[in-house]
Image (cartoon, rainbow, N blue to C red; front, side, top):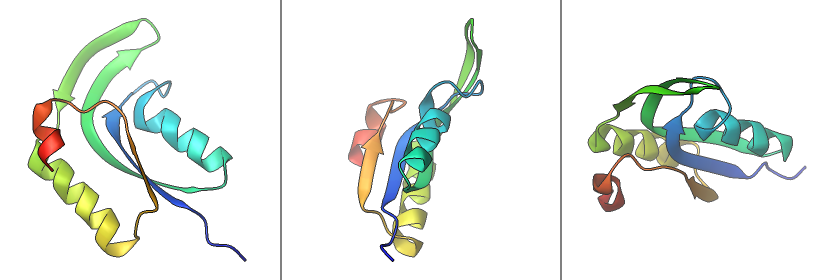
Length: 90
């Protein structure tokens, strides 16, 4: 049996589930792959718009990334919306 491809998504979270890491997880699962996430921002939003955004510190995002790589391993990294330029230096 072939091992599932392991995909790490680095992106923001959409509380309404229509975009961001939530949407990526749905697509990844539909393709029979294993999804992991490193969340760059949390949003308060719905189908009408974004109400507020809480940015996750870059150092914490780095910890999320390393936790996945060190334990589970990663075959593919999918990058969504980084919160700011600090994430490019991780």
